[in-house]
Amino acid sequence: MIAEIPGALAQAAADAVVPQQIDPTTTLVRVEADGMTLIYHYELQELGVTKESLDSLFSTTNLPGICGEPDMVSTMRHGVTFRYEWTTPDRPTPWVIEVTEDDCGALG
Image (cartoon, rainbow, N blue to C red; front, side):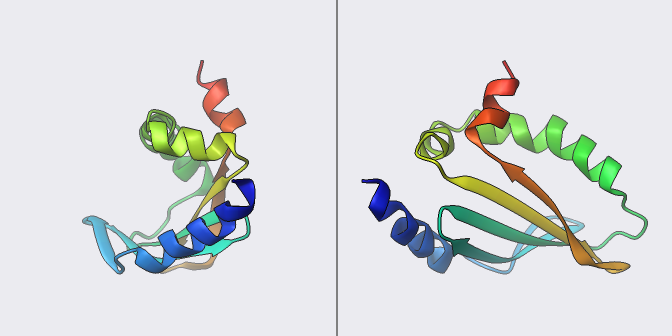
């Protein structure tokens, strides 16, 4: 079963509907798979975003939803990492946050 996961992730990436407007300032522009990692690429249309503000928002808004999604947690239990990358108009090098089963366990 584990051997099938990279192919399933590649298919999930290929099936992603992009670009997709997430909210007024966030667009999902690309999804790709790299082995046991599914990578979501976002563009933020905000200036002056900091890594600290992004980390804080992600941990309070996104992480509980990810860790509360049974299919995502089950996938992480098989060794999959979900990587989220954001660029902004003033920062083309992405900020990266990776989520693994350990991150969900830390939520208690």
